[in-house]
Length: 292
Image (tube, rainbow, N blue to C red; front, side):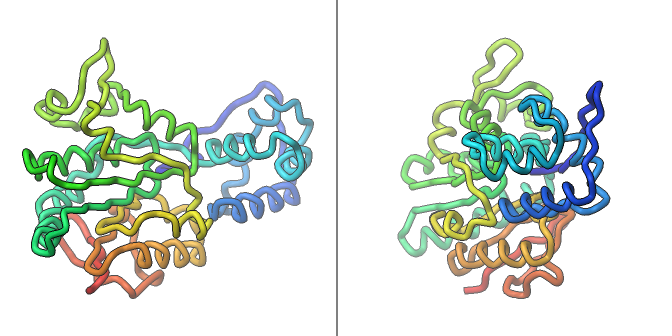
């Protein structure tokens, strides 16, 4: 999830959400997924949901709220609601300074510790993976670092998102040139098969990643994620209020193995959220470590 409400939908017939309807929907969204829609986002929620009302042939937002609560199709519509309130804008090799630190410092440190313990089992969690560019980038970096050694390792990247639609796209692993615009040409040649104007991720990378839907506000779901040495959760917690941020960061702390690392968005911070992690400063990046 990277830019909430970044685009609006224009319809011929304008639908207006009342203050009461907005409060109902905002509270419902928060209860369902922990995303907090501020008052100044009211018009964007209104514009974004107008198409859903039109599609369902509903007259107003009160009817939509009722539909989400009681209609037989409410579970499917909840997935549509999640898609509407989150815009998945991402690309391969996004934020190079962070990825450079991951490739040159964090990953080698973790791999070396695992080698010393005689346990070649690497687990990484990509929480909020969108259409898959982030976990595939991680898989490429792991393959580049381990090289021929990769076959002797047990590597698993758990990649989750709130939206099932973006996960379907991630599982396909087919991308256009724009999404791959910052990807080095030699990486494209090694890890992708070109099909017309599109690039398909090769099977040897796909097998390293397990995609499935998760709601970070659902602690039962979160606790099922296998414990990790590294967690990526970039550009996700900015959509939560402080209580939800603390809850999610606490669950990441619990998931991480001792000495594990948490990597959040470069514009995000754990300041006033958690003191459980030790911040480590690198050029262009701050990485958070769970001390052993």
